[in-house]
Image (cartoon, rainbow, N blue to C red; front, side, top):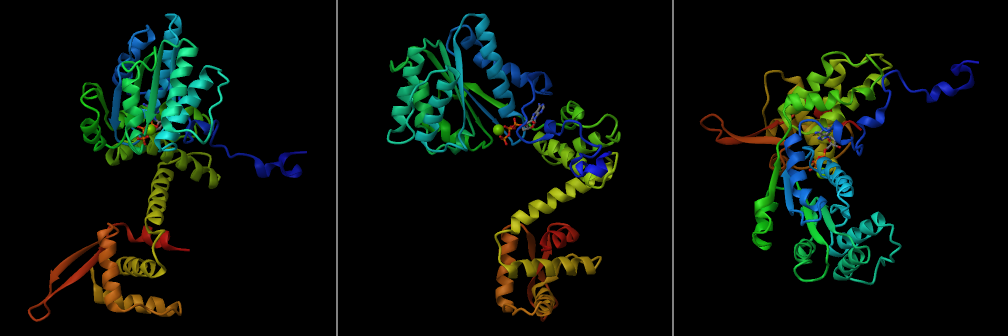
Amino acid sequence: MDDSEDGSSIFAGGDIFEQRELLRVGHVPDIDRIVGRDEEISAVGRALGPGTRGSPPETTIIYGKTGTGKSLVTRCVSRQAQKEADSHDTDFRFSYVDCSDYQSDAKASREMARRLSDTLDAEKNIPRVGIGAADYRDITWELLDEHDVDVFVAILDEVDKLDDDDLLRSLTRAKESGKADAHIGAICVSNKIEYRNRLNERLDSSLQDNELVFDPYDANQIRAILENRTDAFVDGVLQEGVIPKVAALAAQEHGDARKAVDTLYEAGRIAEKEEANIVTEDHVDDAVQRAEINRFKQLVSGTTPHVKHILRTLALLTADNPGQQSFSTHEIYEAYTQLVAAEEGTPLSEDRVYRLLKEQSFLGVTESEHTGGGHSEGSFLEHRLVRDPELVIEALEK
Ligand SMILES: Nc1ncnc2c1ncn2[C@@H]1O[C@H](COP(=O)(O)OP(=O)(O)OP(=O)(O)O)[C@@H](O)[C@H]1O
Ligand SMILES: [Mg+2]
């Protein structure tokens, strides 16, 4: 009996992916699969290095735009530091806390204690409620003492999400205030560069010397990152130009490795859905377009049906009038009332539509500009879509 007879073919994968998990969000590649961050890896290594030999680690703050490898490098190097410390008979421990999941001082402090307790295999009772942030930190210091830990590093990822700086302040002072014997350090990670000033104002100068900035990736680096993951695909299904194309687009737009990996994955999925046996550059174009449509959908997801009608009207006008990009409020209003009538709805007043259009321009969905009409007409407002009308029409389809 073959697949088609017993029905198992409905679960069969296509012929595109071999190990799709290599392209999924959340996949953490090994340190030897990290490309183009050698300097950054060394810098984080230098910060943690003393810790691996029983001396105080350097507290460091890492900045950089989204998708530049900050979390990845920090996690991989910390793991590596733990191994290195073992070879020097140093008991080095770290707790990784993603502050976007634990935004209050108490939650982040609890998570820090919990993670430490896990790595120590300590069966410490860490209450979920009823005690405060400072108590959770005391549990951390106790754990360090009870287990004779030499060096402890707290990794506070997305540190800008924390409600306040108490945790960071107490980490930088735990040793001098006699709360713990271990050397204690912190690595803070943020993609908000504005956070730097806020932090410097409040935490003296102790962190200023140890700032590390991760730059967006260039096309070659993104290309190397993607090439390192081609074993996600069945051998030979990636058309030659696919990776260079994804890399070029990504570098041009954002230099974000996460988005580039996503685009490659999406291109593969689209090929799979079409039951194609090769991934082409056209699939990449489709993937990029899909992503833009999704982003636009998100952008307008919270708006009212009338705003959607107005945007659809503008998109239809733009698509139907090649050579014309901008339309007056009145032109849009006329077309909008027809569109609403066709759906048997009741249109809003022209003044209301005018205000909603101005609001959309403020949100960056459209652009509005005053145009001097003829002598007697005075100036009026013209509106145009920022994005491709086809994309907007598709995104607004139900
Ligand atoms: N140098 C690299 N080599 C291989 N893969 C990488 C590299 N940099 C980033 N990636 C991939 O991109 C994804 C995003 O990287 P990472 O999570 O480290 O970004 P980030 O700088 O922390 O971004 P954010 O500020 O949004 O948290 C990772 O999961 C990884 O798959
Ligand atoms: Mg991150």
